[in-house]
Length: 106
View 1 (cartoon, helix red, strand yellow):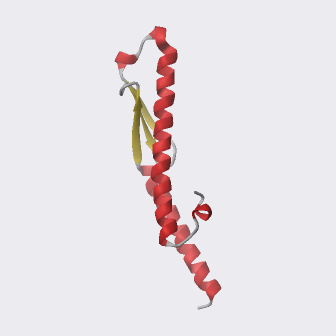
View 2 (cartoon, one colour):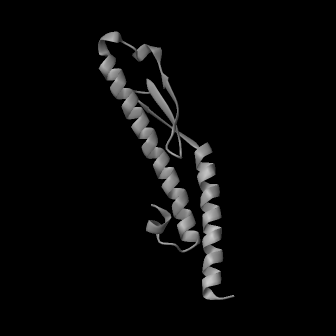
């Protein structure tokens, strides 16, 4: 098989494995919290927010802006954790196929 043919076959395998990894990441979740656990965010490793849980004890109408800040912090922490997991999985693929990370979208 020619070098071009081998390269095309390898690219096809990489594309298939990337698609499979992305589908798995969409199902994988991480949990992050803020305010001592008063606000929890569950984020899928594809970067979407699955759920937010707020402990009723942290709800105080007079401190609504604090609660809002805690929600933002928990969500951002979750997104960062999810990105770390996603990057790790994509890095494994890049290493497996000896592809530079920038070509894997990292």
